[in-house]
Every structure is written in structure tokens, then in C-alpha cells.
Length: 89
Image (cartoon, rainbow, N blue to C red; front, side, top):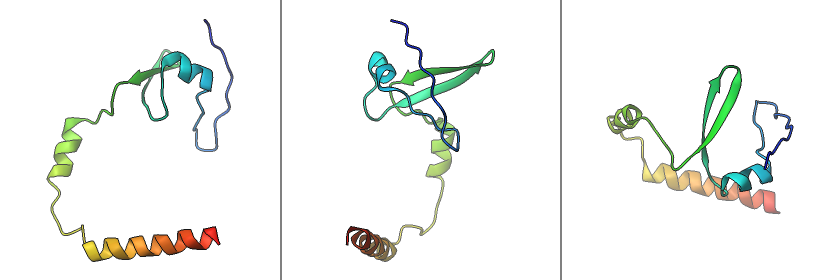
């Protein structure tokens, strides 16, 4: 089955993958894609799981500091809940 469909990008280059294409590739709601360019074409391949370079993970693990403050998290949550309640009313 050859699927051909034309899609227009959103303002920042985002596109929607049509349902028929996702179904044909067996993609569920949340998925990762590997994008590459070859001879002026965009190649899209589904991936099994999130792939993050190990060097990036190692760099993150070296970050030290007191940036996780429980009181600040509670305050942020309260602020967010207030905003959400405003939009519901």
C-alpha cells in the first residue's frame, strides 16, 4: 500500500503525521522518531525507545547544587493550582 499525503507545517516547522501513516507504521500515542536527511529527502524512522547520548546523561549526573527545594516546589504547585482554578471558573 503506497501512502501519499501532503501536509502543511505549523508556524515553527511542526507537522502532523496523518493517522493512516501512524497506523501503517504501528505507532501508538507517544513515540519517538529518528529524522535524517539523505540527498535532499527527510528520512523518518520510528525508534523503540528514547535515545539519549550517554555523554549527555553523564554530564547531567555531574550537576551539583541545591536546586531542588521542597518549599519552592510546594509554592509552585499552589500557584499552578490557582491558575488552573481561575481558568475553570
